[in-house]
Length: 226
Image 1 (cartoon, rainbow, N blue to C red):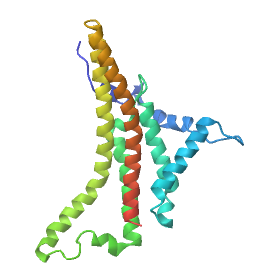
Image 2: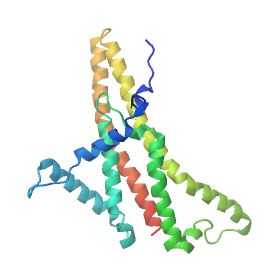
Image 3: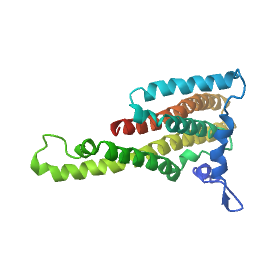
Image 4: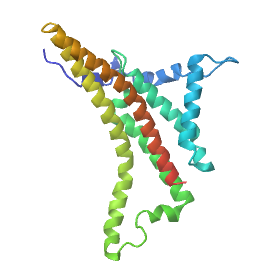
């Protein structure tokens, strides 16, 4: 039986209409705001995680950078919850789409760069030719630094897409192997299933780590421009 490994990464549609906006709204239904005087355990854990991440990520920023706190915390919660929901059976992970990740990375990167040119134009321009650079190397160095600057949003998007897609492909391949080996050798199938279980735990960690890395890099870009 021929099986398309990349079929789970095709955007689902209903009557030709994409369901991606509905899927992207699912994390908002899970991460609800507390409406009681005393929040429950899930909400308490949610508040504790947000405070911990905010303290670690935003401590290095000045007042201008700290004004991005709400946006960055919303970003990390959205990416983490979307990655985790994508590990459920028969689900779809929007962060496996490069177009969506570029759509998240490009406006945030552009906002940090424009903020830097607005508030620190001399420092921002100084990144293109560091002090002490020999005169003959200045044109080549400007081209290299410009290319490296414009590659940053693409690197953000590709890193997130590649890591999430690779993990889903491994789970799919090992799961298919486990099912195929179950009718041949139960012992080998059990070992393969144990590997699949450990890989699933690893993917849970990767889903949260990639959300943290994506947001941390945006935070570093912001720090360099404020």
